[in-house]
Image 1: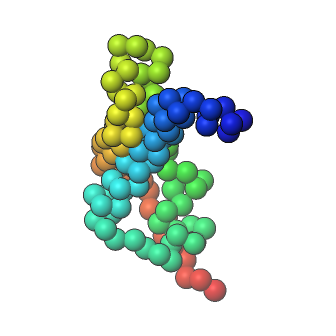
Image 2: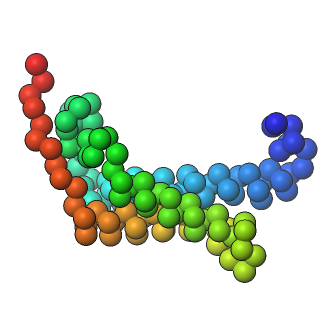
Image 3: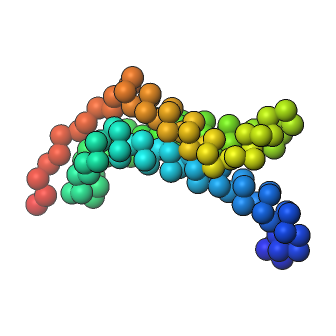
Length: 122
């Protein structure tokens, strides 16, 4: 119902956009921590497309990234439900980014993923 969002600018800006930014900030935190700190700005392009490449993780899921994203979203959105934590929601993008960035970095350092040996493409 997009017309409801557009009917009231406060509903659109301070509810929808701030909540959406909390989720996007969490994703950005994981991506930037992984590329800049964990992988030191190095990307193995071929392995992005290999079934058993460096980025295949456990069945195609990096649970550390999922946990970090969920944690970032949780702290970015908790202010909607707990009024004393509403300032976290006011800065949802930054809170989501910071929490997801830190959690992903720590989890990747503490619990390093097992790298599957790549096979030559036929």
